[in-house]
Image (tube, rainbow, N blue to C red; front, side, top):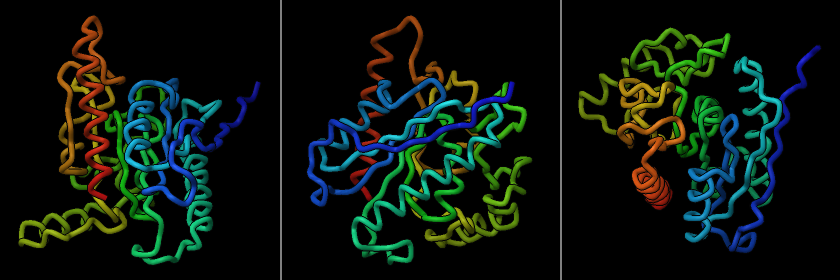
Length: 251
């Protein structure tokens, strides 16, 4: 029997406190597989940002296949529609200058962090990567990971990813003192990464090659929780929430 195609929908959060048109910016909150936007990492990040004047939109994903190569393009299309909708509502279009475009932020968990290459290369938007997929999942036949060209991984030939030479040139520029050097097509602010050291999908080397904004949580799993230690888990939840709020405040 054929698998039901992945379905993606985006709705405004019912707990938004700021009226449309008066927000500090717009956030797209995106779930992981089996980790929806009401789960702790995403829920409390949304609460913190809503208190700071952001309006939250939430993505729902159904029927996601284990083959991530079939899911990621659908997620990317949904993000394209969201960006266009927000910009149209603000009176700007996709060609608007950064000074005139609305302030946008994306927060992804696990599965949806895989959209980072598309978002960075097409829009240059800030992105919070909660438990990003930096080491491929055993169940995924396409063995997808977030491309990190600076470490020369075996997926750098993907069209969305910069080439190894482009990454190397950016590194040479940084060593030469050009602090504004960017890896071609990975535009915009460096993302924020939050992940546990016991997460099987986490890779410290690749995380630090992707961004200087890496927050690690010792012994934490893929939910940034430490099984059997609820106090540590709650402390980590507070730290992640504060890190997201601080990252957003710099935008």
